[in-house]
Image (cartoon, rainbow, N blue to C red; front, side):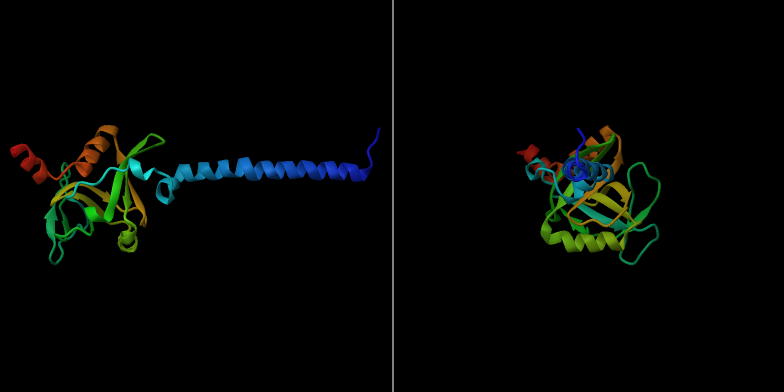
Length: 189
């Protein structure tokens, strides 16, 4: 039995509709999810359980560093790096700007995610945008523990990468542990 052309058109239209719905409901979200995962965007724009964040070390701060001496700047040396860096004595991002930290593991890359308090977003976005390609030091008090290059502007969160698992764990412990002076005073009591 041969179907009339109008019936074939309706069936074809229905098939296109099913394909379109399938693409919109399944394929497109999957594709977008893969793109976001491959660029690490979901860590910056959302996701992540706030309860999984660990509070920062109260002495944690970040400073912009330069390779040339500057007015009012001090010398800083990263452990294991013979280069001398120069930066202002005061941190530009401090522990009170940070909600918390968590470990980052994706595609075999180890790192640390820092989530910032909303009130610090504009300051951090401007700071990072103005200093892309420059060095930023992760500091515990006045001691640099890691110096990295700012790759892109950030505000709500930042991902620090480029570690082996043991390096990441050592840095994470320093960034989240109680201040050294608090640990010493607790041990003395």
